[in-house]
Length: 97
Image (tube, rainbow, N blue to C red):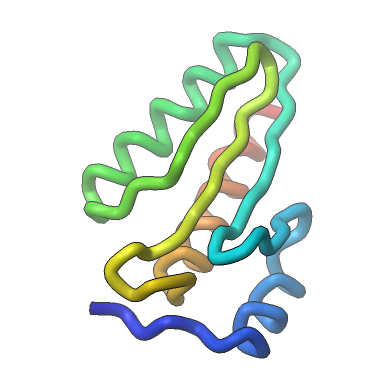
């Protein structure tokens, strides 16, 4: 089980995660797309990685807006894995801009 990050560790991580916000025990970010199907393709890439890592975010698709929420239930909050995946999701998004 991954170690839960302290609030100061989360604050430090957020400095390297533009657009991500802390909402309770979740990291949250909204991604806007020019076309609906690009948002769906983005979500499909996240879904594939989520299965590989066995770590699944909450995903909402609202037409051209995709919202991701990350947390680690077993650890009771955010972990290094959540931060690492947030960075990867941002890299995925760059392909669709």
